[in-house]
Image 1 (spheres, rainbow, N blue to C red):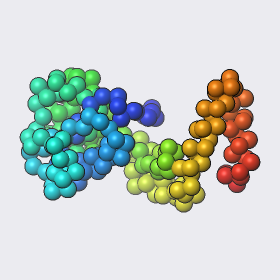
Image 2 (image 1 turned 45 degrees about the vertical axis):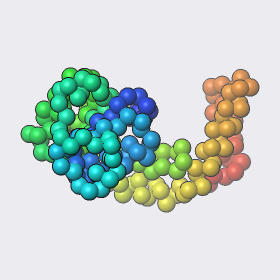
Image 3 (image 1 turned 60 degrees about the vertical axis):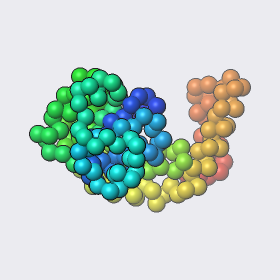
Image 4 (image 1 turned 180 degrees about the vertical axis):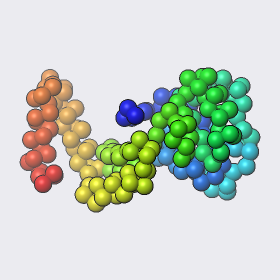
Length: 188
């Protein structure tokens, strides 16, 4: 797997499913304020209905839906392999990347275990082989990186912007930022 971060504004996101896995994915995209989210499920748990609101379509998506929305990312959850396969094909037809919850062989990408402190994100992945281990490792890392890191990242981001405006680039930029981190002993 190639680790990348995708902007939530990169295109439409479609979630197919109405149970706990779909709820988990809906919470994920909402955490990042994705502006174009569409949820499709013939039936959905009450929490999915509430959280999705007007974004929920109470039926399965069709080829026309995929052609109209042209999603970049499709999450499929709470469905078996047989029921997921046609939706995977429809997503691929419009160039979308697909994640099928807990079905590693059907996935184009995986969602890693994430630790988020403001703009700081630390992710742990096992390429889908052992998600429980990834979650345990994320939790261990989380004990070392508390909520104060959100503010620290903001401070470093402001310093980086100022240095870039002054023309500082490359290795010198990295050295200046590392010196700031050392000065505060943030990693000691």
